[in-house]
Length: 306
Image (cartoon, rainbow, N blue to C red; front, side):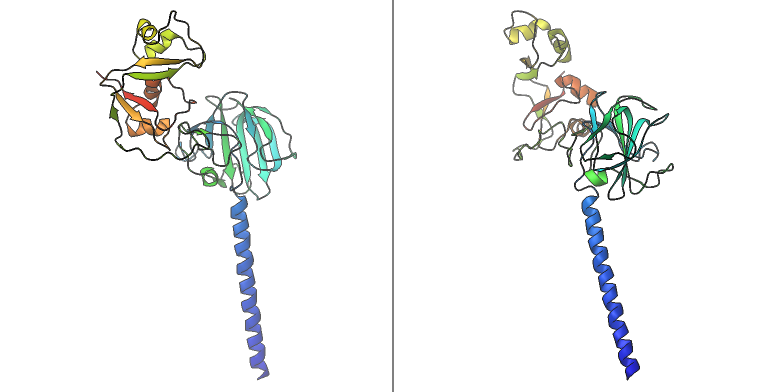
């Protein structure tokens, strides 16, 4: 009888221990999930130029193109584990975060932090550069679940922390969800679906608006749209060929040109891809650059009429 009670008592203790372990493990996983990216911010502003896993799986980070000298920030608080110059990474900073993850910021133009220095989330740690084995000004950003190793076995896709992204999208520094993109302004209210969902529309309007950007000339703008300087001067009642930054010019379009009406969630990259047109061609047709913002209901020229 005594042996039976002892056996039952032991079973109760074991069950209680198992429940406690399950409870504590669940709390730990939940806390880890909460601190592993849900409050992280993106380290730089620029355009995504390459993704994790490309180059036959050897590219273990995300590349974000930007202007040389633009600030790079810590994605989360932590301790600077490395800050040095290497032949491959160029000027590079490594940060070990409180949750055990380590992030890498490579090809910097300069480094503003030292090893063993504690940095806060959003603190400037350097600037965008083109150092090391780099083919253009950009930040190479890596995330490792654990410490960085030479074989990068701990590397994970940064999009697992920040959400999905694609080449051509604009990301914003110090934002957790940076993919507001080039199409919809930040905090733009949701735009109702348009009555027509056709991917392209035959132009019925005879005018198109171009906003003059820095270093543009009337001659250059006329070439972009296949017009003459005189046509633009006449359409806009201009006495000279001089134009100012932010000035809006009316561009006459042909009645058989094809336009696309921008919808909420579109990007220049996604529009070009869905219409099987080259992104550069789309930019030229509309007098845009990769960093220009487009908006819902805006009309974009997809194809010039013959």
